[in-house]
Image (cartoon, rainbow, N blue to C red; front, side, top):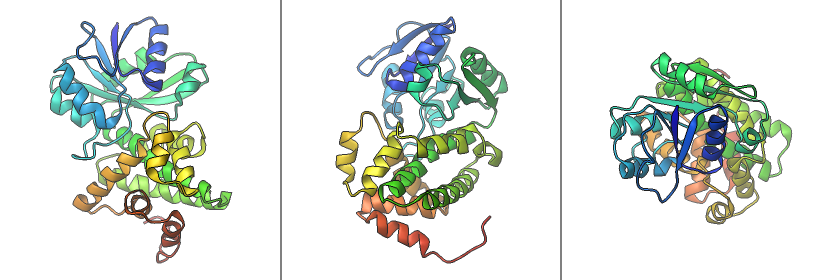
Length: 296
C-alpha cells in the first residue's frame, strides 16, 4: 500500500518508519512541501493541530482515507481533527489513532498499545491491519469522537499534573489531582459526544497516565516549569516541539462558554496560562471549592 505521512516530526517520522517496516511504501510531506508526492492509498496526518487547516488547504482536496495522529482541538472553531478534514476534504474517509505512545519508544520497538478509531468499522479494521505488529498492538473502536477528545484533553490535564510536580507537592497531591482530572475529562468528553467507556481506555486514561507522569512528555515538562515559576513564553521557547496542551486549554475554554461545560481544573489552568494567575493560587482555588459527592 502507498502511504503518505503529512509531517515528519518525532511522531510522524516514527509511525512512518514503523509502517514502512510492515511492508508498505511510505513518503512524507514535510513542512515546506506544497504538493503530494504522488497518489496515496492512505494518508497519515501528523502535523500540529493548529497547522492542520493550512496544511490541508495547501495540498488541496484528497480522496484517500486520512488517519489523524494529531491530538488537539482547533482554537478558533473548537473542531476536532476529523471535523477539519471532513470540512476541507469532504470525500476523504477519516480515522484517528491515539493512545499512550512516545515516539522514542516506538522507534526502539518498546511494546506499545494504541487504538484506531473510525465511524466506519471497516476503515478502523483497515488501519488496524496496516499498523498492528509484534511490538505495536492496535485495538479498534467506532467511537471516533471519544478517541479524539481523549487524545486532546489528556494534554490539558498533563499540564496541570506537571504544574503540581513543579510546585513541589507530594504523591498524594498528584494522585488526587489526576483522579479528579480523569473524572472531569470523562464528563467533558461525554458532553461533547464521546462514549464514556472510551475515556477509560487507551486513548483516555491510558494516555493521561503516560503524558502526566513521563518526563519525555512535553506537556508534563512544560507544566513543571510553570509550577516552578517560569513564564509561559519562556517555557514554550525552550521546548523542542509543540506543547498541544496550551492551545487545547484555550480551545476548551471557548467551548465551555458556548456549551456550558463544567471543567474547574481546566478553568484554573487557563487562568494560569492566559490570565497570569500564580499556580499556587490556582491550586488553592481548587481546594477551596465546596465539598460534593464524588461521582457528579
